[in-house]
Image 1 (tube, rainbow, N blue to C red):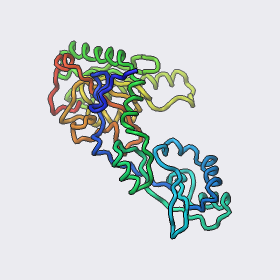
Image 2 (cartoon, rainbow, N blue to C red):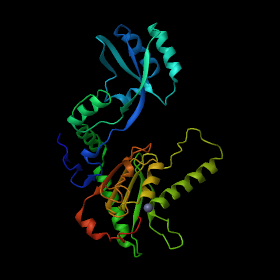
Image 3 (cartoon, rainbow, N blue to C red):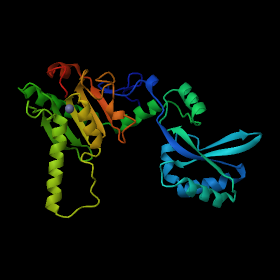
Image 4 (tube, rainbow, N blue to C red):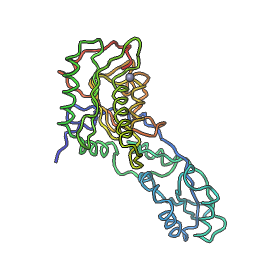
Length: 320
Ligand SMILES: [Zn+2]
């Protein structure tokens, strides 16, 4: 099966330009981990300790070697990645666990910063391996990422929602024909359709903010009608929703999308001066991928010339 993916430009189906950082700008996203150095004869015991106590760290460490052989003054020792420093166990608890399983009183544990992301280049992979901790190289992760996104993308749906925001924008006679649609992809249900209605008195009525507010109001009403608290209800308003919009959102709206936990944003027109998403927009924050935030989402610019020309530009200084 051949995929309609341009790996060089990161374009899917010829119309979806993925917004991701330049490969040369990818920096290691470091996290402190506890590491122990042990006699190789104890490796099985420590690995089974990891399995029983620290198993949930396995996923985030798939790109790293868990165990690495080191030569300390002619003696071979094994360094093993245990768990995050800010995790569930204190240094003393980890020492006690290790003493218990190895019967060794002198197990050395230290802190080390390790990269939680994968570089997209073999050379950088080697560089980070030397500098931080040995990384595995299983081929270019960018190719794997794009294949994964492609397999989960329903291009007909994307096209149909982009058609809808475009048509609604064309009908708008106001100054800012900015239209945003929120969709729950699990049910293909539209959760909100908003046209920018800001006024000089209410300047933060951006379409994204209004969309989230509408979804929040409905959720509140539903919860009040139910009268009892559903403990299983998710507390993120737009968890994994898809958002389609005519103009690239500003930093405030991009942050609101992060906080409400959407999984995908598609926009038509970039906001070069004020946008919070594009590689060359605003201050290049690319909020949807910021390492400092605890949620990320995929973002794409929809590159369709006809639509692009038909939707009106807004003032380049306007925070969409
Ligand atoms: Zn905004």
